[in-house]
Image 1 (tube, chains in turn yellow, red):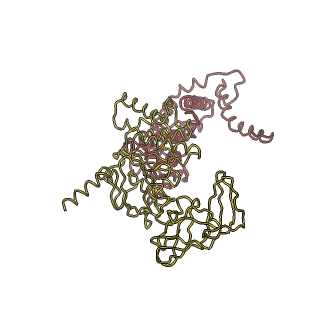
Image 2 (spheres, rainbow over the protein chains, first blue to last red; image 1 turned 180 degrees about the vertical axis):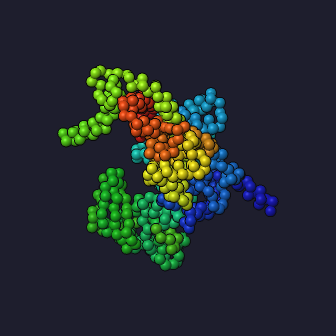
Image 3 (cartoon, one colour; image 1 turned 90 degrees about the vertical axis):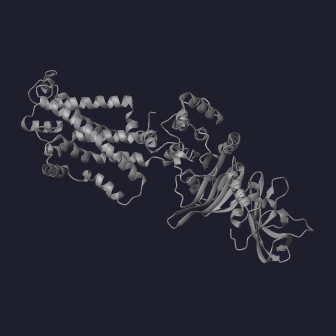
Amino acid sequence: MLRALHYETSKTSMSHLVLDGLTKRFGSFTAVDAMNLSVERGEFVSLLGPSGCGKTTTLQMIAGFVDVDHGGIRLDGADLVSVAPNKRGLGIVFQSYALFPHMTVAENIAFGLEMRDIAKADRDRQTLAAMELVGLKGFADRYPRRMSGGQQQRVALARALVIKPALLLLDEPLSNLDAKLREEMQGELRQIQRSVGTTTILVTHDQHEAMALSDRIVLMNQGRIEQIGAPDQVYDHPASAFVASFLGKTNVLSGIGDGQGAAAIGGLVLPLPGAGKGPLQLAVRPERLTFAGAEEPGLEARILGRVFQGTHWLLTADSAAGALTLMRGNDGAAVPAEGETVRLRFSAADAALLPAGAAA
Amino acid sequence: MRRNGPLALIFHGLFVVFMLAPLLIVCVVAFTPEGYLSLPTRGPSLRWFKAIFDYPEFIRAFRDSLWLAALSSTIAIMLAVPAALAIARYRFPGREAITALFMSPLMVPHVVLGIAFLRFFTQIGISGTFVGLVLSHIIVVIPFALRLVLAASYGIDRRIEHAAISLGAGTATVFRRVTLPLILPGVVSGWLLAAINSFDEVTMTVFIASPATVTLPVRMFLYIQDNIDPLIAAVSACLIAMTAILLFALDRLFGLDRLFVGSGKG
């Protein structure tokens, strides 16, 4: 009994941030439904999902801008819900940057230090260090409206980091930037977060951003967590049809299980431990579908269309197991034309068995 | 850029002339040496400007009007700021009703307001006092103050305030350091518009003013009922000159476009 208790406390003290059955309702709509999540110190976790999945509400509850209906939020083991939002000491970066337009860059960054009654000399030193950290040295007297979106985002990041926050909350921070800049900022954001070591929660609907930045991804849908895991783990082993279809492109193929650990998908028979008897559904990534050799068993498919994407071709096809998409690298080999019939194969390791009854 | 056609130019020209001609003529007439309203054909004279000082009522009325405008518009703006922030941000029962109530003085003819206030002030025993004048003017100018502050309040990104809160600012600090600076153009222009409207108000004030509390427009109105001489033109010219100087000073100090539009000079 005592041992169990000790185990429990040591387990909670290890996690930096704990969401415990966090729930928020707006009228009859449940925005966040009994969410449980533990985040380790220094970890970069993304809340990923379509709009309305509850990710932003979750972030706002952590920040204190939305009241919690049920459940708790603990930071370093201490209750956070009862702490006023201005006493939580969290750094937040918003999609709209939310800089103070009537203050210069230096004044923006120094605001949090000023609120902490830090002496002017110290304040200036820390502000300068923060500007250096985000690569904005020499911009101290600039007003935000005279800066580009990327620069404004850096100011917002510096302003949030300069107060040495216990948590860094990022609310779609890069969505307002164009694609090229976004990619640059992703790399920089990750590098800054690593060097500072601040535990970070990112809210995003952009799967690429979540995969590029995070240690772990929390996939959310309709207020619930669908899956938590490292980016490659979640991508390769989606726990549900929703995850499979939301993260990257995926094919959901229907097959028949024989009840003895194998399944037939069209003409292709694969060993699938865990497959029951009767109809089943498999998720297979387009890049894992390959053409079968002449002697090999394969799934027959008729090519319906093909789109050239530079580095690869995207082919759509129709098969007995359902409509599917496949990817062919642009390696110089001939690509089947529309109307041609091809035979496809994939290995059991490339397929994720989807829970029965789950629909994409 | 598209150039204006001749018709448009004529229209604009006529429009500007129509706006400015009366002001210009009043200013010119003010310099007449004659004893009646006329253009100064015999050369300009400062006779009627000197005459203003023979009528201390005008000086006193001017001072009272300034006080009245400053007081009523300041109190009106102090009521309008919290009202506007509440109306812009929260959905509460009676929100529409409160907005309509604040705006209603625009809908009611000032003659009606004048009679109503006269009756009401007599009833509560503040008829003919400066306090009564201030109270009635607050009510008349509040729609102008509220309108402009409301427009500014709707434009605020609440996440800017959230950012300030997350950085440790309390409610009062957020208002002082973030919210107020953000709505300042609306507050300043609302105050200015309210002050101008108060300074300018005759229709209602005529009913409420007593000999002890006569505003400048009412004094001028009473004066021209008895005599029509260039004195009134001289007073008008002084007002026009003061307005011009004030606007010029405001423009140099803050930028008029920034005050009224909320952008421009940084």
